[in-house]
Length: 223
Image 1 (cartoon, rainbow, N blue to C red):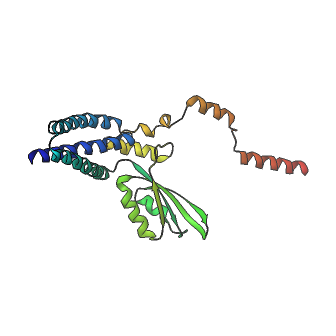
Image 2 (spheres, rainbow, N blue to C red):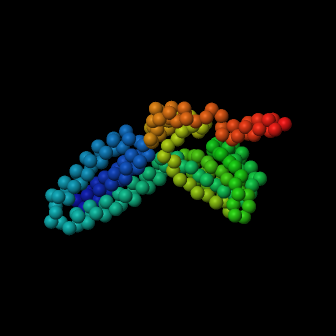
Image 3 (tube, rainbow, N blue to C red):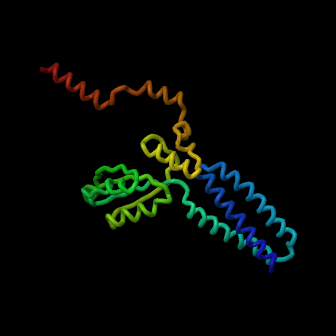
């Protein structure tokens, strides 16, 4: 019985580390992922060795399998508590004139808002970037202001530009997180030489402004 409990606990610990390490890797926390991997391998070898030494006892194999399943659940719960990373939340409300953006900014959220047009008329659209730790608070604020608001969220992979980037860097450093994914040069596919070549091809003035200037010149010529 003691051996079963030991194998069960070891495998729960191992798979918990495995799950968290994979999530750290996906979030760009490569140093933490590397540190966890060393502990993970040690625990894995320890647990596997105990099972291989007692292959004739089916209860040990069952304990190993059950521990694996429980480890996934435990690891996922730990990750939810850590709430790593950021989310972009899009909110669409029928209340076009309601000051959602101002109220959310007072709560510390970065909000970009505009008026869009849906099938049933105008809608107020907001895009909000926040940390996952503050995600539930954001939902509570939005639902309190408009219970019928449409809300959709997704996890951004990279950031570039805007006042939020500098804010995120400071926030990430306080929490000891990696911030390389916030840098322009680490955006996927970005090549400085190609960017410079594209800049040479882009007109200095916006196309619409040039059209307006040409129109004014034509009007003057007609006069």
